[in-house]
Image (cartoon, rainbow, N blue to C red):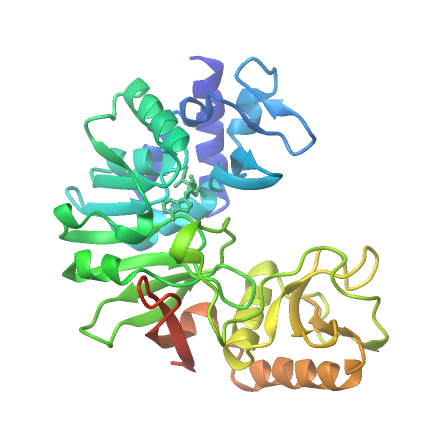
Length: 373
Ligand SMILES: C[S@@+](CC[C@H](N)C(=O)[O-])C[C@H]1O[C@@H](n2cnc3c(N)ncnc32)[C@H](O)[C@@H]1O
């Protein structure tokens, strides 16, 4: 047994033990597809190193439950192999059968397409970047899956109309709304999964076509994704503010103590965050200065006009800054308590209708009026 095989077996075992790999088909696919072949041009080690196959840590870093950034442009990650547990959860949500026809948006490394093809799906996948498409094609050929996955170059917004009749569309890049073309290209009982920007995050939504003007979205999974290029990332009036990175907020001047001890775990915190975003359009991701606002940042009501706002932490405490700090803090407290009073709904407890937004020539469909089921 090679060291890659051993590491892959251990990785599958660990994902399974942590409850992150569901059905047998998924376990088998993760055990068969060599992830290292899909990142053969290396990836960002996160410490300034580019890790290639010659690096002694290459295989051990490949076989961890981590995303691997495989392309960076102007300091921004633009292509990757997503986090394995997230890929597994999305594939599980696709409820694939042998022969299912899947359109994937964002081929990236090709690893996700390879997993789905190994489970018997017929996969068409597209990516906007020619170098990414070329590398994915080489990798798929190397592992003997070239015939099972059809790789296309182009803006995913368009889909592949000539091959319409997909059972599933799966979007593996963050979008601000979904393309109406995808809905047109689904079979009548098909559905699509897409990470649609909501309150500064990219939760995965399950979307069913449902006839003209009747498409419906339902929250499905907590997730983080890099953003798409082109019309799929259009900003539109009434959207949540774009996420703000470290240092975007001044030090807090108003503080309210915690409500939960221990703090909510990452899943419950994202359930709370989703609800706050469903109720209040000012919600986004924001980070304050190091040492303030509880570290890496999180759910924040942003005061876009005056450069401040109020952040809600996983223990339910609130920190606020800016000229309207006290009012923003009170608003966040009210939203937090409303979530509790409503029975602490999950992401999957929310539905919304989809309405057109963005460029009228290339509209996207965005969720409007979230309702707790
Ligand atoms: C997170 S990666 C995809 C991960 C991939 N499915 C995997 O598992 O290896 C996102 C990909 O989306 C592509 N992308 C960005 N905007 C796009 C667009 N408008 N249409 C198609 N692909 C796009 C990027 O080039 C990038 O390769």
